[in-house]
Image 1 (tube, rainbow, N blue to C red):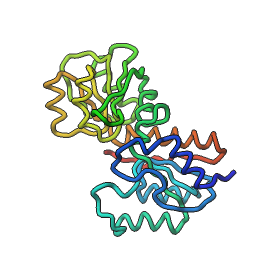
Image 2: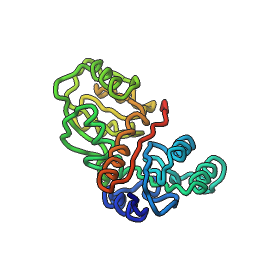
Image 3: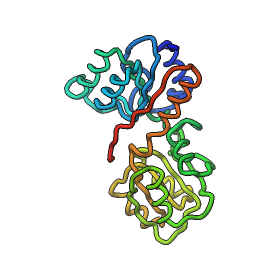
Length: 253
């Protein structure tokens, strides 16, 4: 069964509501391809390796979290970007990309899916005033030591997190935001969290952890953002009867 590309675009916009976000890139259809979508490949980043894998798997469309045309980058389609876009155009593969909307969806988004994976009870969301709340707040089912939480993250995500200790504080209240959300750490601290989980760490993060007495975990940008796009792809496959496959291109970041 084939799905019209315009219908797919409309469904994604309705589902993820990109108009609610001030984002760093255009959300939606970034590179036009075939109109008839029979097979959808999902992945985290529209790298050349993912595009080639999608082509090898006879994809008609590619849905990613990290696409192209980021704010502040050179808009010229040259070099690596030209090679990527050329692969898509030559093989008539459409590229759809959703950034913050894919983080924030209440059921299918990266934050929601990470909570399910880690078995956190979601309690609330927060964030900078006037913006869509991207920091999620929740609870563990039982109090954990900071070491036990680090081991839990490694077990579920398949990589050892960078952990900066906040002292001997047990973890019951957690805050998290997938990807590069280390700048939200102080928002997590103000929320009363015992620990904050995100993808990356910056130099100030260690000082905040030690001074605030809140544990900080950088569990991997890629590792924390593999799950939302899979959930959306599965949703589309179930609703429209198209074929879906997630392809994971390993990334140590």
